[in-house]
Every structure is written in C-alpha cells, then in structure tokens.
Length: 279
Image (cartoon, rainbow, N blue to C red; front, side, top):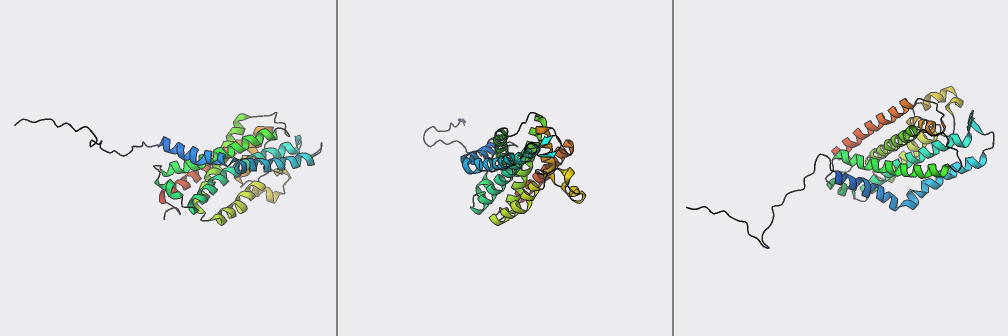
C-alpha cells in the first residue's frame, strides 16, 4: 500500500491556521500606544486649556511679583524676590500638571466606562502604571519647559546646573504622575479627585518654601516643613537655577525616588487586583 503525501489544497478554501499574537515580556508597541497616543498626544490635542492654561496662570504669578518687587526686595541675602520665587512656581506647575493629567484621565475613563478598553489591552499591570505615570510626567515637563523659557524674560538664570534642574524636574514629574495614577484609581467620582487636589496637592505646593525661606519660619513651623517632599523638590530645583539651597540635594532626590518606587508598587498592585476598575 503506497502512502501519498497530502498536499493542502490551494484556492479560496485554503486557510492558514490561526495563531494568537505573541508578546514578549515587555509589549513595546502596546506600551508606546498607551504612553504616547492615549496620554501625551491626547494632552497636546487639548493644548489650549491643558497646556496654555497652566502656562498663563503661572506666568501671572511671576508677573505679579515682578511688578510688585523693588530694587531691595529680597527673601534671602543676595537673591532677588522674583529669582527666589520663580523656580518654585515652575516646578509646582510641573507637579500639578503631572498629577492632574494622570488622575483626571483615570477618573474620566472610569466614569465613562472607557476603562474596559484599557483592561482588555495586552498590557501588564506594571506597563499600565508606567504608561499613565510617564505620559503624565511628560505633559508636566512640557509645561515646565515652556514656563521656564517664558520666565527667563523676568528672571536671570545665569547660574544653571543641568544635572540638578533636569534631575529634580524629572523626579518630581514622575512622583506626581504616580501619585495621580494612584489617586485616579482610588477616586470614584470628581468630588474625590477635587478633594485630594484641594486638601493635599495645593497645601503641599503652597507650604513648600516657594514663597518664603525656611530660615524665616518660627522654630515650630520649621520642623514640619521638612516632612513635605515638595520642599526638597523645589529646593533642589532652585539650587540648579540660582545656586541657593536650604537642604541636601542628595536627600531630596533620594526621597523623591524612594516615594516614587513605593507609589509604583502600590499602583501595580491596584491594577493587578483590579481595584475599583472591575465591574
């Protein structure tokens, strides 16, 4: 009995066997889509209110102090009023934009039922956290770059330490992007988001040494400000722009990175268990 080799038929009825898409441990294409198209590009599409809005409001702060100061207006010896305040305003704009973009995006997706699209994407919980946090940090840094360029009209940034400026700007943007991601997962409606923004983010920014020097605070208040991580972020960023610092830059960058690692772990765990995003 002869055995003949069966040849698959050719034509319209010949189909290839279906194979599911295979992704490696890191889904680069999916992460880029999540990071850029759903995060960064969407932010730029609404640039008038999301990009220009924080830029104009922060510039108004700087402009008010620039008009109000006189030749002798100083907060610390040898540093002008506007030169001392401007770095804090720039960094707070970076932090607030990063937090707002991550938290508001997640709250909107949850309330509109769009979070199911994210859950069905072939992305791991860690890739989801990284996508939200890094895209929000990129948006915050975009606002910071534009604001710094505009603020250079009023402030002389002749002293510039690129390692401190870039390091603290990126670390702060990442920290608040991760914080916004965690808050967005926790918040069930806009009231929750507004409460965190009003009672946590705003006090952290206003009580961070942006508008005052720690040396001028009473002893009782001086102890408390050292528990504010935004103080170390603004102080390190200011040191990179004008060369004046009131704390250790190594301690500040280490604190920001350590808190970011904890928030990343928490965000990964919340996505892994489907916290408040599973039907």
